[in-house]
Image 1 (tube, rainbow, N blue to C red):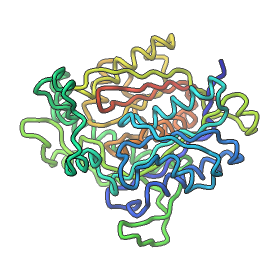
Image 2: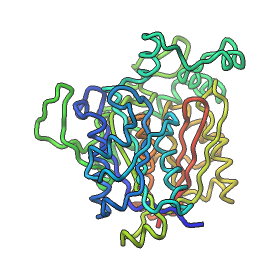
Image 3: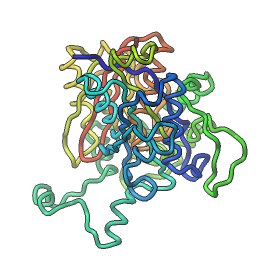
Length: 392
């Protein structure tokens, strides 16, 4: 079977809700991202066999197959198809898995896996809320309610359940949030994100432009202190999680170009990384956020590796208890985790986050001259993707 290589990996800098990317239609933002991948590789646009794009809130501007619409908004020819993926927060990580599987099978040679989400323009939960408001029902079917009686599938409740199960105090979570923010600040000031970020014109919510380029993740709180984090109120009475220990709402796009050996030859460029192992696992939909640790164990076992073989980890910071619990469950070295900060500081643009984290992981492996990286994230419905890559 052929190998799957990543030859380019880029992302936009994250935009705050209502911030510097709020004026971008998500289709056009994704189109610019596709163009950037062509620029990085010098690829003939006609060589692209498919575009697979993650997006969670597929309504309004993000509806009607945003992947195909992004192709039409880019300089890719009309002959390039596109399909959209929803595996909740892991949507674009799953897009990468599908792209890798396509080129490994030999059915395709050059595939773009990407993700996009404008959480400003299409708010979280919008598709479900709009359906309910218009009498179109909800996803909780009678059969699901029979299997899980008197149960609410709620990520916030799940995060609190994990914190209680692992014995994390509010102070533990606050300290983690401060540490990941400091790592993001250090990475930004040290220029470690510069090669991975695609500059976009600043477009404000009212459509105005100011001639500036957006190149720095807008969610980073450069003036953060432990006191400021401790001063944020709890999301739930009696809980331990606050907005400061949760991932930030964010706008953004990201993507990678995936090829096999024939694709490498056609492009005439060197790969950045090889996809070493791919796993996806379903787990408890009630706790919802605890699938990454059994999925990591499964991926390592399938790869014939152990946790100490991995040089860098990217574990999505949906809420602070998730990476903390992952560390405790896997025994991983905390110094290798989210070394440039995570979603608490940088933002979590839902369907964009999978290839966003992969982009950061690939560049971090090259900057640190490391070999193996592992990425995972919790996903709605109680699932997790795991991807292990090897730097080329």
